[in-house]
Image (cartoon, rainbow, N blue to C red; front, side):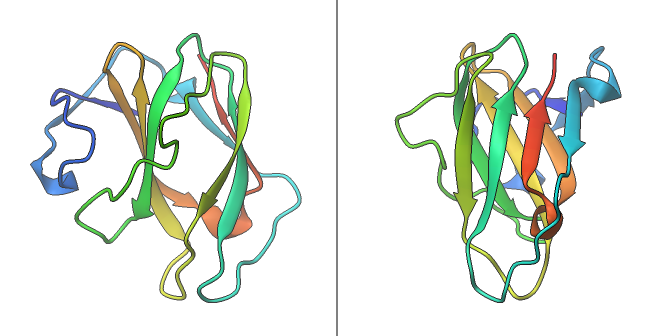
Length: 127
């Protein structure tokens, strides 16, 4: 897991200067249950469980090979600490590997790269 020093959550991935944090690698744990395979161009849907101590105010998901993050998938919503939300991402027939950027209430950024959304049903953000 990495924490971005720049606080513009929608900026290009290549413009973000990332640095390792003291948080353990277990801070972002990916839990796959009952794998599913997405057809080309269909939505990839998973349940995001926020087991962290932070409210999530924005969520960006884009194919790992893309240079930009795209739109905030939470819109004006937030996922409170301890809550869960259903997340839907426009699918691609080119890849199953996606990067995820979480923006927490204080503006901090957390990222995980190379997440296989084609086989993912549950994703848990852990403390």
